[in-house]
Amino acid sequence: SGPGGGGSQVLLDGATLKLLSGRVYSLVGRNGVGKSSLLKRIDAGKVPGFPPHITTLLVPQEVFGHDDLTPIDVVLQNHRKMKKRSAEANAIRIGELEAQLDALDVELETDQAKMEGLCEKISQLEDFDGEEDEGDTSVMEVRAREALRFFGVPESTFDSMPTSKLSGGVRKKVSLACALISRPGLLLLDEPTNHLSIDGILQLRRLIMDCGDSKTTVVLVSHDVDLINDVATDTIHFTNQRLFYYPGTYRDFVRYRQQGITHELKQAGALERQRATMVKSIENLKKKSSSSSNSATKKKIGKAIVSRKKKLERHGVEKNEHGHRWTAQSAGTGIRAGAINGVDVSTRNSLTHKQLLKRAEVDIGPIPDKAVQFNFRDPTSTWGDEPLVMVMDVGHRYVDEATNGLIFDCVELAIREGSRTTILGENGSGKSTLLSIIAGKTTPVQGTVHFATGISIGYFHQHIADELIGGSIDDTGACKSGGIVTPLSLLTKLFPHKTEHDLRSELTSFGLSPKQANTNVRFLSGGERCRLCMTAMMLKDPHLLVIDEISNHLDVESVEALVYGIRKWN
Image (cartoon, rainbow, N blue to C red):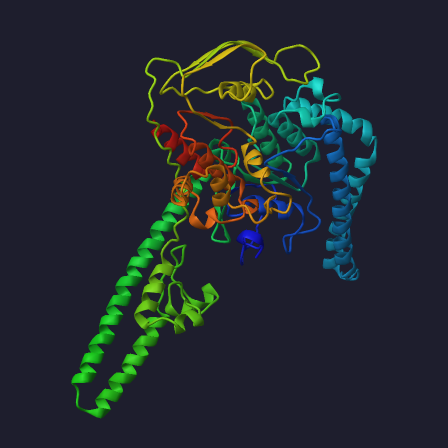
């Protein structure tokens, strides 16, 4: 294992990846199970047995900008990269088809028909490469501009503005524009709605629907329930180091999953009753043996006890997860689920017969997932009718803005106790800047902002994880001052007046287990880092929360729990 116990974590064990052409798969699972890691390994071609002739394109959670590349440069550069990968994939595929061709017998009539089909496929692949070469540069620049317009990237930025100066939402649109013109065999979307405006999400839906029409397979990780319910054709559940497949949308998956859990509980109950009957039968035989004076009878009863114990150890569930009766032939193994024989030998040798029975009962029941709670502690101070924050005639521009134009002006806003205010707007319209002004982190160039006396503001911005964690670790994940940074050690440094018990309690309140509290922060998932940042924010005992894209890295169930937690917060 690596430093902090997270370097060599097993994410998948004995799992099978099955993807069909033209399908849209929603990959779901709790934060930290490895969804993003799986997508990265697929894109890097590091999944054992993955077909090398299938081209892949990953749109990551966070799209980083470049100081020397404009949006049009990024799209064209990505196209050249994908064109090279496509040519390599076609060459591999052509080689495979030619090998099949060589293995056929030209004299056989059945093989002649197969040869014609293989030759046609090879010709199509060779023609595809030729089409890509003709007038590629000029045509692709036109297509790149059309793709950027499709996703609403401002035309003024196409050739003049480095992507490092674009907002997160616009950078995400540039990345999606790359996917639009490349059309790989497999499109991997990791939280594609992060930072996107409403219009951007609508265009994303169109892109995914078009992929289905062009037989491009899509694997989608998203916390947007409406999106995955509308576009997904199948659901992959990533849990317990396995991949489980369900037909239909996330809504269908929830229903199937609930039915599966109910089935497992019924099986566990039936197995427990059957075992109790068998144990009682063995106990009765033991009593009968002890009361008998005939040695031959005792020997006969002893054989019966041994036989019934063996039957008890073999006994497991009667039906599989589909409701079909269990057979060794269909299961591919002689060991039933929930059977004592299914417990590994080293464990069996260290447990009594009663403990083995209890262990097998636990193994058949559904394994509970980790908690997804968010417990926000209520503030104690009250201000009555006095506004907590008053924004008066505020206007602002970026410091390095080439022109003197304001990104917004004449903003009037009052934040009162008990209110919930939502700010909507296009990507790049200044939403994050306005929230930073409300939180007191940015001073506007025009107007004034008044804060209530003694108010404490909790501010969760889009890049808070980089700010909180990045300043404490180097590229290897080691603490810049020596040692390993864990959530607990990081919070201890930030809040020296808090006891370890208080810090652990707060981490637990935001769904981070004791094990995660002692894990190297380098190996925390995006959702787990989000929980750590919320913990740090709430340890400051805020009276007002200003949150910017807080759900970006959270799984579906965590988003629902977050909504519930905020609604309960006073």
